[in-house]
Length: 458
Image 1: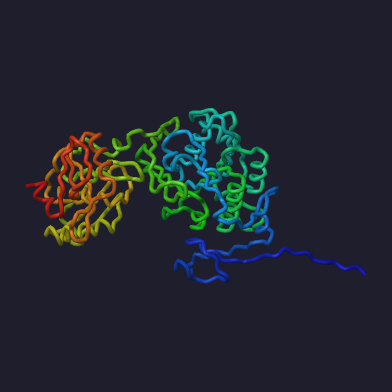
Image 2: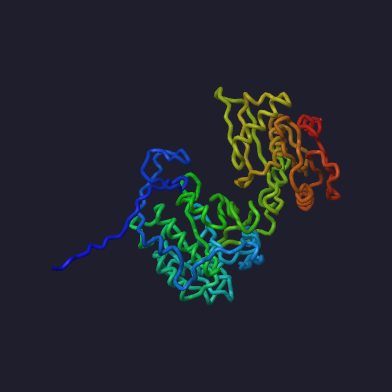
C-alpha cells in the first residue's frame, strides 16, 4: 500500500491599510488606526517569505548584547559628488542606510541618481532599473556629465535576482529605480501592491544593514502628493528625501523630511539644464526679484531651512470681495497660518480683512513652513491693504503670536547676515536685546504688531 502526502504551503491572509500601513486580521470598511474608509487591501503572505526575509545566506544569527559593552563609533559616510545632496543627507550617505527619494513623475529623480552614479569615480555602483530598458538608461547617461567605469546597470524587477547580483558584485552603493516595480516570488500579489512594496523593502533593508552597503530607493508620488506604497515604507527607511519643483521653473529642490543620521528639514537646490542638474551656489538670488522691490504688497523674509539661511519674496494682494464671499488663497504657506495672521491683524490692528479677498504667494513656487516669516507676510498684507510700497532694501524676520506680540526666531544673526550679504540695509523684527547683530544693517526691534504700522507708513 502506497501513501501519498500532499504538500501545501502555509498561506497567511492579512489586510493592510493603504493609508497608514497597519495590519488587520479581517477586512473592515474603516481602518481602526487612521479612520480612513475603503483603504484595506488583501495581502497573502506565504510562510517561506518570512524565512527568506530573515537574513541573507552566510550571515550569522544576531544575539542580545549589553548596551554598556558596546563601543560607540562615529557613523562612516559615503561622500557623494556635489554639495547639495550631501548637505541634505547630513554630510554623505551613512553606511548601511536605506534612503527613499520621492517626487512627481518627470521631476528629475532618475536624472539626479544616474548623474550621481556617473560622477562617483573610484566607487563601484549598481544601478537597478525597473522602469526603463538598458538602452533608455544609456541614452540619458550619454548627455549627463561623468564617466564612472565601475558603474553597473541591471534591468531587473525580481528582488531575489537583485540581491544575488549584489552578493556577486559587492558594490559600494546600490540604486533602485523604483521600489514600486520590484516583486518577490514569495508573494502572489502584483508589483506595486502594499505587500510587495513592504516585502521588497524589507529584503533590501536586511541587505543594507547586514552588509553595510547603502541603498537608494526611488518612490512615486500619488495624486495627493504623498509617497505611494503606504506610510509603512517611510517608517522602514532611514531617510526620506522629497524631490520637488514647479514644471514652469528651471530649479529643483530636494528636502529631507526624515533623517536618522542628520538634521531636518534641510534643503538643496538644483537648476535643470539639458546636460543634467546643476547645483545652485546662491539660492537666495533665485527667489528675489529686483524689478518688483518697489511694488506694493511685496516683502522679503529671512527664513532658515535646516542650517541654511534663505531669503524669500512674499507677495500679497488685498482687494474688495467682488462676489460677496471673500476668497482666501495661499501658495507656498499653510492656509491655516494665513487665516491666523488675518485674524490677528483684524483684532489687534483694527483692519477690516473680513470683507477683502486675500491672496498670498511665495515667489518661485517655493513651499516653506518657517514661523519666522510671519512678519514678512504681515508686512506684505499691510502694504497691499494700503497700496503703499514698503521701504526699499528692507528685511522682515519675526514670529507672530495670537496676542499680536512679536517673538524672535532661532538663529537671528545668521538670517540677518544672509540679508546683509544680499544687499539689505535695514531689518524689522522682534526686540533683540543681547543678540549679536551684523554691523552695517539697521535693525528695528518691535514688541507688538501694532507698532509695525507707524514704523512702516508713518
